[in-house]
Amino acid sequence: MLFETETLKLLTDALANLEEGFAFLPDYEAPAAGQTPMASVIAEVASRLRNNYPYFHPLYAGQMLKPPHPVARAAYALATWINPNNHALDGGRASSAMEKEAVAEIAAMFGWRDHLGHLCGGGTMANLEALWVAGQLHREKTIVASEQAHYTHHRITSVLRLPFAEVPSDNQGRMDCGVLEKMLEAGNVGCVVATVGTTGTGALDSLPRILALRERYGFRLHVDAAYGGYYTLAANLGREARAVYNLMGQAESIVIDPHKHGLQPYGCGCVLFRDPSVGSLYKHESPYTYFTSSDLHLGEISLECSRPGASAVALWATQRLLPLVRGGEFAAMLESSRQAALALYQRLGSDPRWRVPFAPELDIVVWAPRAGSARGTSELSQRIFDAAARRNLHLALIRLPVRFFASAEPGMSADQDTVLCLRSVLMKPEHLAWVERIAAILSQCAEEVLA
Image 1: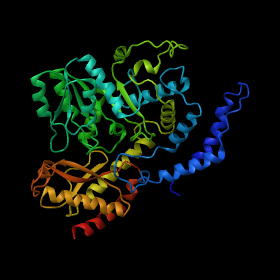
Image 2 (image 1 turned 45 degrees about the horizontal axis):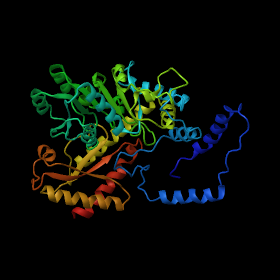
Image 3 (image 1 turned 120 degrees about the vertical axis):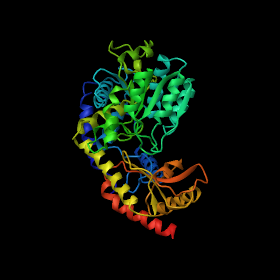
Image 4 (image 1 turned 90 degrees about the vertical axis):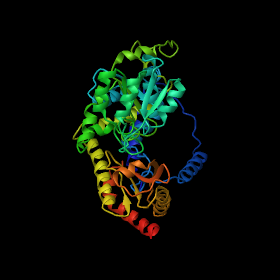
């Protein structure tokens, strides 16, 4: 069986437990669900959902799609019987408390006890809030991010009507701090966005160098760790990567996505601020929603209004089962994913049919078939991608600057500026046990395409 079903039994018992908590209410006949028509609709839904890639399976190694933990699925579903809204305590009393507890546990990973933070619909909304705060505090100043940073930063600054500039990356996919310094010397930079785990290659911008520049130029530092943030718990990072994570707590704001490595259903992002006083920027009055409590309502520190309390309940339950501590079960899952990426990198690097520009810093591996030109390499990458899919191995494609390959291994003529590469995100702990099979399928694809 491919799908876990034990939580369905737990959910039945949990619903009975939940209902007991409202036994003091008068009897109430819930509207009939219409079982026969509903059954046919749900059956149709199941049939429609079969038109998907198998995101849950280890042979899916393409995009950043990771199945939620069973406890997250069950807790989320259970909460929907109440359907709390975490904008105000009036709409989500228990789930708001659970959100505050869960967010505090995330902040603690970076050494923050006093902080301000909340859950969002995802990384885009979380980054929007962080950059909105940066814009409020450094009005009309430019926000800069690496050219390998997520495209959402350019979009967000456009929405916020803030000036934005890209910093070129080095040949490892990291922000070029030499160019950054020249931009800082020119003046008017209010915020630097450092990416800790780019979504393309998993590269980590150098926080040691960026923080040294902050000492001289006084900008605000925002860390977009939507993808890579949880890896602060992993014990098997490289030396440079460990140095980056050790300094994350010195940023002014951090974004992390529990719906990536945090085992949560979509959408669940999180924004954190080191200085709680930025909450004053959100100040507003909403007497018709904030009327039963003088405690802080989450809507008072959020740009979003209605938000699903079920997301907070699922996250809280997951972190109760799998605490966010080094050496724990959750950390071991991350370490397994990184070990899988290193194993695949070594397999590919020892095969003369492939070019691998750099070692993975987290769990993303990027490589390309060997050819004489960037154009030829790109064509072969597409064919191998298609051949792998026919064998039920689902990869991703990414366009990278040719110089990423030229610096690591000369021999590819630059007849175009970019090269289409193959990319794997080995973010499931099960991937470690499947590396040999993945490598074997890739070898078959190479034999077919490169023959």
